[in-house]
Image 1 (tube, rainbow, N blue to C red):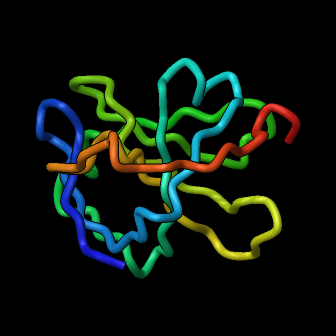
Image 2: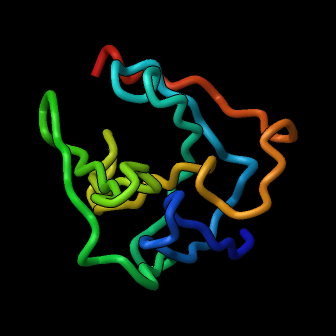
Image 3: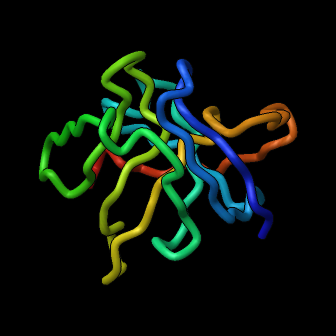
Length: 117
């Protein structure tokens, strides 16, 4: 795992997180498909929100398991919080597209069938 910094487009929301980018995923649910999310999961302990807590808005849908966090200024969703299927503890799903300096072409995300969940 390596430590990365990231945030929303306008810079109001900033965070750092420890991730293994060899474990990225793309989901086929209605939200992820529309947003083009590439996600990578982190434990709550490996994630630190550095700024913008007061700028975050929350969106939930379907079974309301995931709390999608987006910047109320620019509308970008840099991460979400929730308990993934088969897990007991809350985790952070980081939008890898919102990490600083990542070469997205080097990633090989696995496919997740979120549409069926």
